[in-house]
Image (cartoon, rainbow, N blue to C red; front, side, top):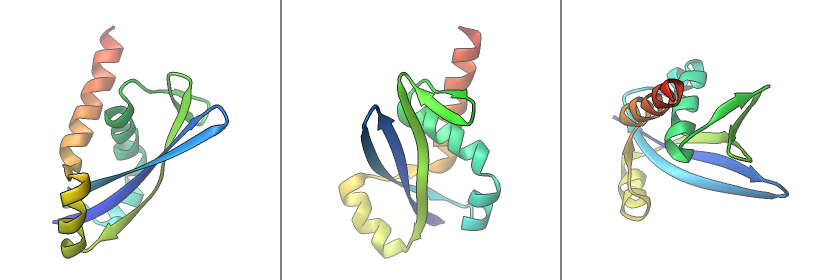
Length: 107
């Protein structure tokens, strides 16, 4: 199992916000990079609820949202971070985000 600290970005007018989410996954950094569109759009849908793509930007209501970066963290660091941030299964996040897209498509 690998652990990654994902930083998402939220731009709301002139204000910018960053949030960090600790995830666990069997995917490698290389796999995350290669499959970035799939997991990132589902992560954003999970994190912000409804999102839609306009041009090259993902929007949630009137905010532009994106994945700022991610970094792999050691198991020991993940254990400490999980005490403060919690930790999430990336495969479940992807499934939940995909479900959000399917619900919006049916609406």
